Image 1 (cartoon, one colour):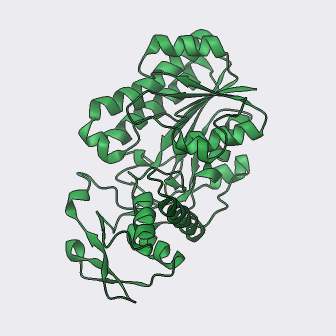
Image 2 (cartoon, rainbow, N blue to C red):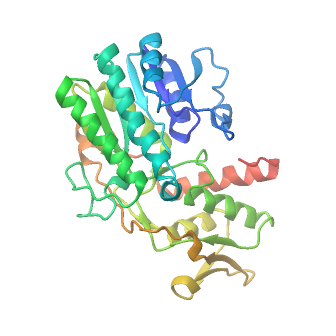
Length: 343
């Protein structure tokens, strides 16, 4: 079996490539050349030099390049994980976000239609499409109300995937994944910012960590569990849309508390809103501060997803608790900081 995984240098791309290689796949991982392109994730997973993994430079916004890529490789499956995926950055770069995340998906779907409509396609949709949530918990039939250019671009890609499924009978599946984290998460994301910051505080390398809206609630799962769900969606009898989530929501504040507990720091919270701070009980020092500069222009407040359909139809459910995830991430960051790694 041959699979194209777009966005191989990202968290999900690295975990999915590793999973597929263990299944005996020949994996073609695409990446876009930027000043920051690096492959530390696939290096850390030990697959960078796997003979069945081929790295391919590819620009999703180039329609002709997408046709040539698919025609050359003739894959059985395509997993589209590439995106400009930072919500905050999407407000600063709405055009770039839309071109990569939205139009890039259309380019792949149209290329499949032209080259070989029998190729199975997985689209990485996101809970950010729900945005200003219309019901709780969110499931496959919940109305969308995205609150960022990223969410809007993903919604375009999501509906285009459904359109190609219905119009051209392409096996095009969309996975609406709620937040999923891991030690391979980028430091631009709040969870990794927290675990890396607490690791530095524990090691005496940082005094205080500044965060934005710590009241924001998210449904956080483990990325390694979620990529297995992506694979299962393309093995199902028919294409459909599935939510992957944990059906549990926690505040950023609670995520910080759990991370502190994992490294033996007892934290107490004092103050309200922008004056709120987290204090290390043992030392009396302020280790967490709220800084409004990290607030989003339009915040998504409460996210919680139901994975009932995925459980019933795919046999998928999350296996890793949030407490286990926090401990895993902060332990990895302690090790990296001790070794002098900066990623």
